[in-house]
Image 1 (spheres, rainbow, N blue to C red):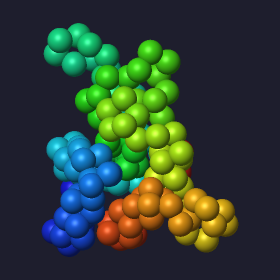
Image 2: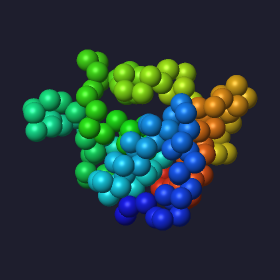
Image 3: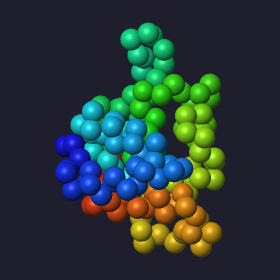
Length: 142
């Protein structure tokens, strides 16, 4: 399943976001290119190699599901310790706190209690708005 026309339209204003738009644009390109379902609750990644024999993040094809942060890392080089937070910073200069709030906004259940500080942050709202723009998402079940 690739993104629907309505989902693409809904995401356009978010792709223009000055801080997080580039990350979202890369995630959308990967969801479309790989025909992977945007899904909350799973990075959906594995480490593979590119044609130059360098390690890169790839979709875990058996799952065919990937969250916002996972999709943004596809084809990017893992950092030395293989930490997703550090890889997001290395590629998009998104701080650990912003990463955590993006994760909460996109991957958490909207009924979960989120601290007032986190729920008012720009990064939390961005992750939440991406989730809303995509509509009903699958929740990953292993």
